[in-house]
Image (cartoon, rainbow, N blue to C red; front, side, top):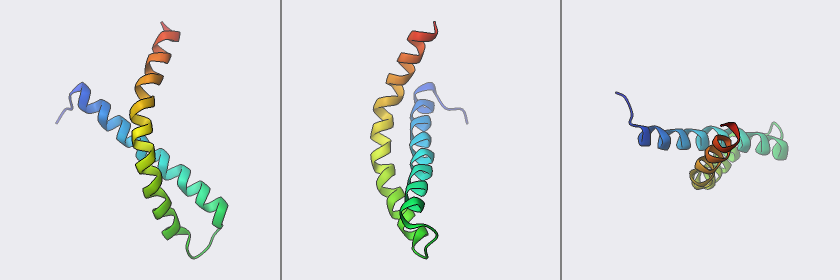
Length: 74
């Protein structure tokens, strides 16, 4: 199944928010807690919150960044 261009743009934004929020929340949770027995549960909680924040932020910033990059690269 091939995605349309608008569908691919939405998928890109969601996946970027997903993976970036996962990485950032893991690093920050580890810095805050270290290797504790609560690391995984705290990370999953923090990841949920960060994904909820990252998705609308990515929704706004990804098109803006694409326009900026297009403007300076053509």
